[in-house]
Image (cartoon, rainbow, N blue to C red; front, top):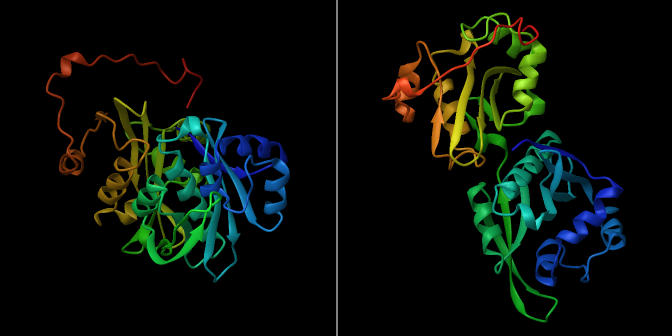
Length: 305
């Protein structure tokens, strides 16, 4: 699943309105709106909002969100969070909220707030898994005159994704491809590889995960997967100056727990000398190596490195 967060455009509004397919879904997304949601209602609301964004999955819009409040040194408040009904229960909601949190943190927000209703159990569970915690509640009256609870939730700053001063991030737009190419070009598995191939591999991977410290990138890994039965872990690299500190292990723990691949049945890798890194994570030497086959082509046959 290749996920990209981009600014919403006027052409997106009709599609987003269609995702609010009933009055209950619309209430969870936009309590003040009247069903059916129209582009005019949404556009009027967006005039008072910030950073309206669409999450594209494999090039297709799959989720939408914005911020009620977004400013440096202040809390940010998520709003209008909705996922295409055809893409629900596929990890899209998590990817959308995570991407919006990263956007807010880059804008200098001190924490992230959201509101979730007591009837919306899947959303409450999602926010809890993402590190949001209740900080208050209030009574609300819905479109049918029913009284219920609205929970105010908050997620702390990026410190939740930082350990020992190292920041772990799955944002592909943050990758330093000059650093990454230089590191991979010195490995035994991709000697002399060029930046175009490194970028292409990252772009077509299911998940990329990198580590950052002292203002620069220091580690990287990626996984290709069908999201179900098969995953392949590749290009695990740590800057030589940062090796021996457990960064590879923590990076791998995060990428293997990523919602896009956490439920994959079989994950494979190839290594020459790093068995001690992978064994504690559950990897073992394949018991029937004769079952594996390989087709290789030289760099010249595939257009260079």
